Image (cartoon, rainbow, N blue to C red; front, side, top):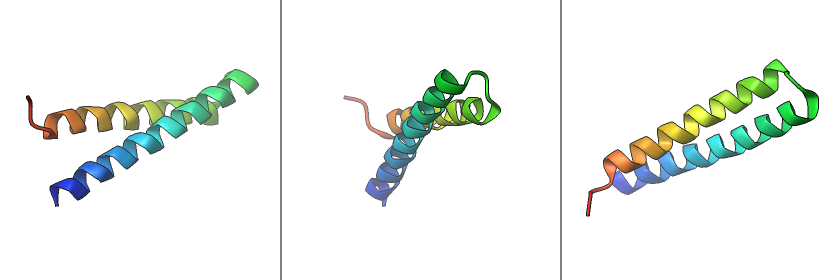
Length: 61
């Protein structure tokens, strides 16, 4: 169960990375557009949150 939870967190982080990259490209190409800025912000939140949860769940060496 724990392994499934870790993989779910990693997939959320990957989705956040893709959303942040797509949002960044959209903002870079079209300027200050709400959809691009929202995608960039949501992607960064997902990516950073997934990294934080992943580090909190894994045991420390």
